[in-house]
Length: 411
Ligand code: ATP
Ligand code: MG
Image (tube, rainbow, N blue to C red):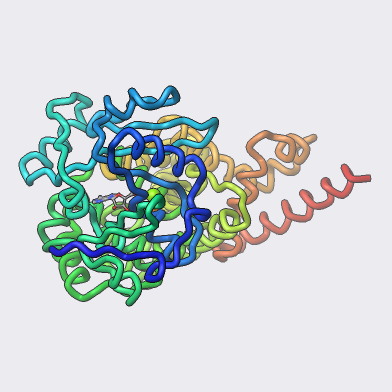
């Protein structure tokens, strides 16, 4: 691959667009005689006039050498040693150039993650190796803010300018090395609005099953990155479209397609809701997302138990336990989150239970319960999805009660 250099006339970036802290790290490394660049998502997003999430740096200095240059530096990472330079709450991640490990090593890496043992060392490389091990050409650009140039080994600059999402190397091989790249492809397709080329679509169709080999811990993080980033609904639609969703949430996929047409109204309402919250600068919690993702299979299981004459409270606990446990084979769900999900689901039956409202002090007790607000928000989504008459009635009741209570407190 030939190396191309783009100057400020070509790329139009100015160092003022780069975080001060990242600039300082680059200056320190450069003054000590090393090469250092802004890489990855930040360069891509700046060129597309989007605000970068963070500024990552790549350098030929090794982690120990980096550490010697900064007082505020911490080395992290089991699989790959990285340096974190701390500026208060801002963390600049500095990675040493590295080469793609071959297939055997990649398998060994995965074992490392699952078992938690470090059995191999880092494979450092040249800047060119580092460019070629990245996923997409438009993610493999190196920006040197001191000389104001972009260094490009993969034709990423032109691909970015012409709206092409091109994987580096052979798609089948790169997806086999790391199946998460299929999910990244979908994320960038939606985030950047660049269509996936046909060779990637074909490779995804053939290899989607490989997602099951990714460790559940990593998959949990990936799902959050996919669905809690302000474009969750668009990404969900594409995951369904490419038959990737069912590889991550097989129970949900089965429950959704049972009637022939997807019963995913609640899930879509939840995703739209968290997209809006995130885009307005509020947070959205992962337990609420997972509660929505697994609601349909949970409800199916609950109804099976009810028809076996199991009492509602017990049925909700048994069904939650079963569905969450099965999901752990695909995405880990931390203990704290699974108990929050179970509580949220259990509370739904209290809100739809007409008798509970009629007990003396019943309404006040429910309304002032610490879990009420989240459970009520979830009930409103079920109403938006027209789950049943009973749900619509309960949601209307609690909406009126909640608003009346809020008015009373203002007075
Ligand atoms: P975002 O803006 O969502 O953070 P990003 O491109 O910065 O997108 P990161 O996960 O932060 O994504 O990764 C930083 C860079 O590391 C990527 O731009 C890419 O060059 C490289 N990278 C990340 N994950 C992979 C992977 N699975 N395979 C190859 N390269 C990867
Ligand atoms: Mg990033």
